[in-house]
Length: 377
Ligand code: SAH
Image (cartoon, rainbow, N blue to C red; front, side):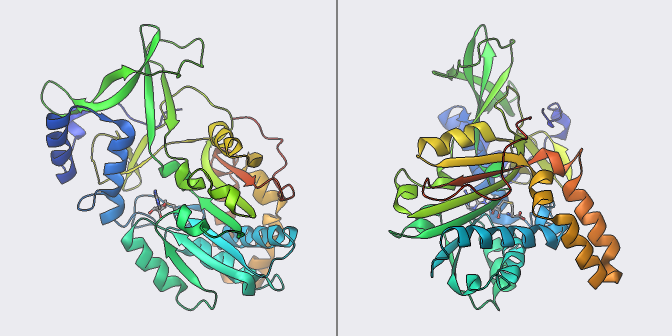
């Protein structure tokens, strides 16, 4: 399951953040892995999201909405149907977590106009931690008539009693910090980021992990991963309950059933490297454990639909029909439309590696296109 190359010390780069982290570890001791990831993402001076062009051909990775406009258009139609299922309320919050360059929201809003009354009902809230991306989103969505508000977190976006809300999150949960536990002598120990004998960053064993022994038989050195920040998707304890009807759509790469394994990965300039090589200069992410995400939602009295594979979800929503209509209308773009859709649907790539999970308040009807028959990892 791991995409992580072995830790080649010669690949290690002496980034500004590596120096700051080593000084901090010398003073305070090893850091929990989720804290290391949080600092790598968000350190105000040297954090990855604070300083870099992250998404697109010039960035480190490309996401589904950047591959094909059809992706966002189908999600937009899905939102329109969900809104109708909510009884077509006169106001609905359309919230996006981690909107990247704003491309997905732009495509969603374009088709929202085609669902009678939907566009005019929208209050758009974008939750974005990256100041540079916030500016990119502002520039792209500047001409929209719908009101758009930027929020620091999901709590602020959902913070109104009686709100109807639809929350979109594409490749958001994979960026949330994870912890890892490693199997040593029949027990689980927290894996932390410390220093090796030469004073360089290295994984070290931390304290015993209580309550991590749900997996009975695990080999020595097996790894378990836990996301420690699902609240960034659902908000504080009472948030979902306060919204009268709320729906979440998570699209991310990951596995339907919890499994042992190290999935933390670092990508820089479209290439994998070890997560400790370039602190602050590589994208760190981990596969989403959809079983754990669903369990967290259930602990908030929310109901889950799916997960299904991305190929099944987009197929049910009619991606092939939509693509052929677009190709007929834009013959000059036919090749790029076809190759983009093929990439999103690829049986050995995004089509199956990405899963789609719907989450809803119990008052909302089962969500379209998310009947689970893909409970394979
Ligand atoms: N959804 C976009 C971008 C995915 S990249 C797309 O599909 O293209 C992850 C996005 O989440 C980035 O916009 C990043 O800045 C944002 N992000 C990551 N962690 C965040 C957090 N804790 N709070 C808010 N935004 C976050």
